[in-house]
Image 1 (cartoon, rainbow, N blue to C red):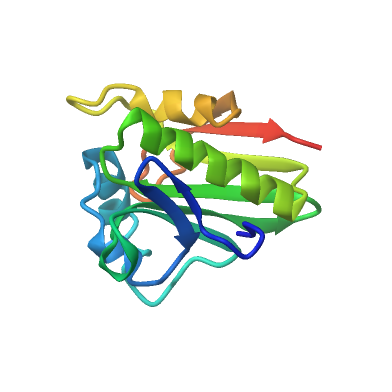
Image 2 (cartoon, rainbow, N blue to C red):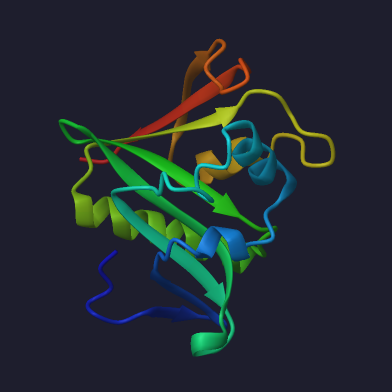
Length: 162
């Protein structure tokens, strides 16, 4: 993610380049942790994400604490797939996630960005993930039956930005 060579700081939070060790240091929200476990923990293993990635941290410099990470992976022809792994963020934290998302879209010149969200509400969290996808400017396109790693239904959210 390009931030003109600088890290982006706001309200004690910092957006910085992603490091493969970041996901293991995040105390993930139940829905994100569940998704990772069902998929075989791809962020924790050798199959590291490609494309453009970022990490949101709290705390000073080398002692920072990762709160979230995400990115865009190219699908070809101006299409990108978005991913996110996060702790339970404050409203300011979610605002920084949205900022990172906008910066990546601008940098990649993405025409279309897609994101899959589990179709079932989670106990205690409900439909929160669907609201976050919409807050990033993505619209619900449809249900993908049996799409998930354990056969769960997912909702495809997408946005056209060019």
